Length: 114
Image (tube, rainbow, N blue to C red; front, side, top):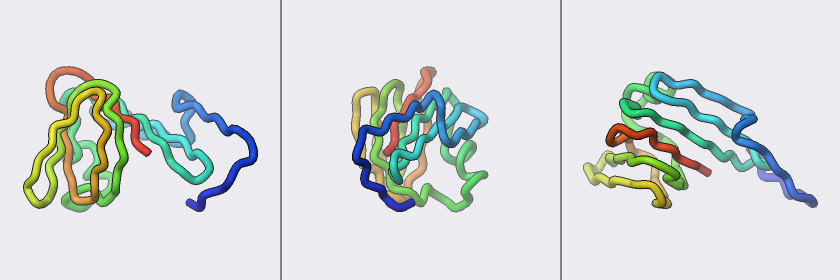
């Protein structure tokens, strides 16, 4: 998508997404904000990149870069180089391509991604 400059405030609602992906263990809702996608993912216990995303996109790890805010819950990231990160509610992350992820614990994990 190509970025567009606005001359007025643009507002969208994640509750009224441009794109919606139901997953076995959650859902993803996205809006396009003038060429910049913003996603809200609600990931339930049992969600993992391997079981919920890999079947849709293929590959051994996520090929995308993420800028992410953890609104609720806990998520574990494992990079191809073996390094591991646990992110909790309130954390803001930059995640390069080459990662896999899992929800940790018994609570939903809510992520905002841009």
